[in-house]
Length: 351
Image 1 (cartoon, rainbow, N blue to C red):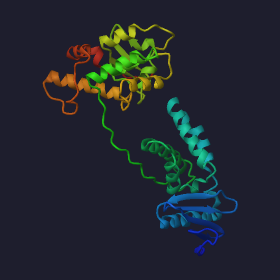
Image 2 (cartoon, one colour):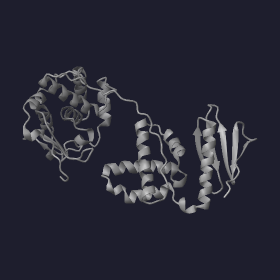
Image 3 (cartoon, rainbow, N blue to C red):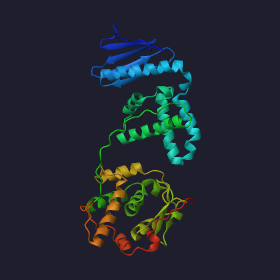
Image 4 (cartoon, rainbow, N blue to C red):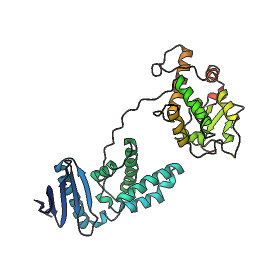
């Protein structure tokens, strides 16, 4: 079959616009005052498609490729009868139940965002430029943009390999993530932060932050702790709900044990609150640590351990040499005399 003739002409109704006509479809390319080119394809019976490019030739290439896909769908309708909404619905039924509840819920939220924007688009019409254009509109950090792209890519890969709905998955370049300096608390900063947390209106913030600083636990791991997970006799805290799904038991310093034993019991959970983000944000700003994240408490804990161990072996720690080690004498004693039952990482598949 001879491909239809591609004709370019300047639209008389729009200055700076080019209309591309191909087999009944109309692609209009408009140059904006900022110097970018917006390509829009309108075809009877189809939703208008558009994308923005920095170069005119890229806009023309996208218009040609997209219109070719529209024509191919007309001659081979079996390849393009499934929309993104259909794929999301099937993926939610067949694939999401395999993930743990928190991961599945996150995937549902991301896929709902994609469905709102491209739900009516046929899978065959979803290409690299369309995905990149939607991600560019997302007002979030590059890491989050990459995460949104990864969730969509996982769905499209399933549609290609298992369902055979599309021949290939569009490849989208990852957004660049600038390297972030690992933030470690010094003695003065740690004192200010703990004092600010202690003065917080939240009754749990100080204990949560102190536990993170002395055990290296993650935010959600600590909030999900139950009283039965804390063994005061053996000095162990067991994290059952972890990031990688593996159960982990860590030593509990005496100072941490004292802080937790002073808490009143209100139900089975150690910390009844479901979130502490607002209280944490207020406390760190009051302590003049607006650039310090909760996860940095984990880095700080690791740095203290590295320094204490390097002091013990009399070998300097190059990575954290600037961090002071006057904190946690109880932790230092625990490292010098580690009981066998305290240093082993316990892993099991069920509680």
